[in-house]
Every structure is written in structure tokens, then in C-alpha cells.
Amino acid sequence: MTSGGSLSAGVGSDSAAGTAAGVASVEAPYDVVIIGAGPAGLAAGLNLVRARRRTLMIDSNRPRHSATLRSHGFITRDGVPPLELRRIGREEYEAYPAAEFHMGLVRTVEQLPGADLADATAARFTVSTKGMRGEKNRVVTARTVLIATGLAETLPALPSIRAWYGTNLHSCIGCDGYEEADRALALIGETDDLAEHALLISQWTDDLIVFTNGIAQVSDADEASLAARGIRVDRRPLTDVVGERGAMTGIQVADGEFVARAGGFVRPRYEAAATFVAALTPATDAYGLIVVDPQGRTSVPGLYAAGDTTPPGPEQLLVSAGEGARAAVAINRELLGPLATHPPLNLAARTEVG
Ligand SMILES: Cc1cc2nc3c(=O)[nH]c(=O)nc-3n(C[C@H](O)[C@H](O)[C@H](O)COP(=O)(O)OP(=O)(O)OC[C@H]3O[C@@H](n4cnc5c(N)ncnc54)[C@H](O)[C@@H]3O)c2cc1C
Image (tube, rainbow, N blue to C red; front, side, top):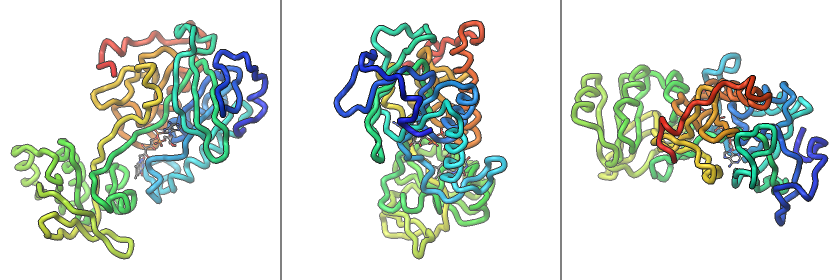
């Protein structure tokens, strides 16, 4: 069911969330608001609407992997275009009466004024959105919220790197190593974990050069260890990634040399795509990812997270879908009350609070 269906009925202007200018309506609380319709959000949504939980899924339709034509490693769907996977997932979710979908960008998730976060029987959160593709802005309330918004990534600032990302340059070694096997490859990155990534890539090729762009640090010991495997570290600043007729041909180094490479990997910098939840201050790890317990619960009661936005990965479709499904079970249990709920872990005591 798309936004504005019969499940939005019963709306009252006297709702606790109030009515803001440009907002479509203020509605009765949802059992669950899921933010993000990637594999994590879709898997959670499917399980929750099958449990007849009144669910609103909100998505801004900007999946990180949209640049790629084929995705790999998802059983029964190896090689499927990632957008096709999302389309099927959304279709399956929306086939159930308890499902609602809203195309929009979530701006804030906040505690409902006066709400007791420990009380799952009542609305605890307000979620406000900027509607997209003709949909109106919305402010809704929810008993539970699941964050499944994936990662925000920053690639090294080379002018053409985005043009090759997802086709000739990849971030997920396990996802695309097989397709790049036995070619002359580059690993480009500015973080200090390139040696580890290079080692993983060496599983598929014995012709690999690591490009630090003059920024990433590779220790002498790591460089020697890579050299023993035939992997060279190039520490020079880069000008661009070069190609012609739709195929990458190499790396242009700032000193003028061109290094021929047929493809490779890039190591982005990542952070959780979840600034909208800052007011609730869920515990995060050193990278800003949202820490969850084995049930997908964050340090904020009633607030869950799943998929790439949580550590420790690996960042893959099937892993995210599994985490979403697991969070759905925990959410459904919490909504049934304490008898069905596993005792929470004290995440804040074990991690940095971000
Ligand atoms: C180029 C590339 C290729 C890849 N290839 C593979 C592969 O072959 N196999 C594999 O297993 N994995 C692959 N991956 C990894 C895979 O795409 C991710 O692990 C997976 O998509 C993560 O799922 P997710 O549900 O956590 O988040 P995502 O799939 O990233 O979905 C997050 C969703 O949240 C939405 N969103 C974000 N912020 C907001 C907001 N404020 N309001 C509303 N919605 C919001 C986004 O629009 C997006 O739709 C690839 C990744 C990339 C970048």
C-alpha cells in the first residue's frame, strides 16, 4: 500500500505531534517506522507486515549501490541488478495490508514530548520527512523505529572516480573480486588500512598496485609484507582515473606518469547515513556507526538499527537482509511486552557514546 492509503485514516489534528506548515497530516502511531528500503529495511518490513504490525517504510531512493549493474552473492539472485532486487522486495512488502510506503527523506527522529521510552505500548517517537516525487512532507509517530539507511561514503577526490565506480572500480572486494580476477588492478584509498584490503584483493589477482594518493599511511613492515606477495605501493599524489570507450585504462599520476590498470577497488571513507537521529544520541562506535546488540537494539529503548549502518559488516546485501529480519523479530517481541522480550544489553557501557 502506498502513502495515503486507508491505514493513514483515523488521523486527528489534536495528535501529540502537532501540524507543521506543508505537512500532509498527523496520524495515529505506527507500530514501526522503518527508515530505508534497502535489503535491511525491506527484509524487516516483510517480516513485520506478515506479523500484522502497522508499518510505515520511508525511503529517499538513493541506494549507495545504484551505480552498479549487477550484484553478487545473494542466494537465488546472484548477478541480479540491485535495483531489481529492491523492486521485488518492495512489491513483496506492499502486498500486505499492514504495509505503507512513503517516498521521502527523513529529517528528524525525536522522542515524542512526554513519552516514556520504556513503555512500548504507546507512541514514543516522532519522525518528520521531506516528501519526494510529489509526496507531501509528513510528521508521524511510532512505537518503534528501525534505522536501515546504510552508509554515506566519500571517495578520494579524483575528478572521474565516480564515473568508474560500480563498473570498473568497486568498494566491496568479496562482491566483485571474482569479476575482476586475473587483471591488472589498482587499489586506491586514503585510509590507513590499505594493506589489509590489498591482501584480500590478492586472492583474485597477482598484479596489484596500491595507490595512497600521497595521503594513506602504509607502514614499512606492511609494505615489505605486500612486496613479498608482488604488490607494489605507490605513494604519489594522483590526478585522475582514466579510461576510454566505457573502459578504465589506468591511473594518471600527478608527476605525469600514466600507470595502466584495467580496473580495481577503491576504499571509501564511511559513516552512518543517520544524522537525522542525532537528538536521540544512540551509542556509536569509533567510525560513527550505530552500535546494536544481537537483536538489533540500539542504546535507545525502542530504537533499532540494521544493515550497513551498524558494525561490524561485512557490508553485503544478504548480511543486511539477515540483520533486518532479525531486528524485525525483536521489534515484534518488544511490541508484545516484557514477557516476549530478551533482556537488553548495556551498549552505552561498552562503547563510546556519539
Ligand atoms: C557499488 C557497490 C556495489 C555493491 N555490490 C554488491 C554486491 O555485488 N553484493 C553485495 O552483497 N553487496 C554489494 N554492495 C553492498 C550492498 O549494496 C550493501 O551492503 C547493502 O545495500 C546495504 O543494505 P542496507 O539496507 O543496509 O542499506 P542500503 O541498501 O544502502 O539502503 C539504504 C536506503 O536508505 C535510504 N536512506 C538513506 N538516508 C535516508 C533518509 N534520511 N531518509 C529516508 N531514506 C534514507 C537510501 O535512499 C537507501 O535506499 C555494493 C555496494 C556498492 C556501493
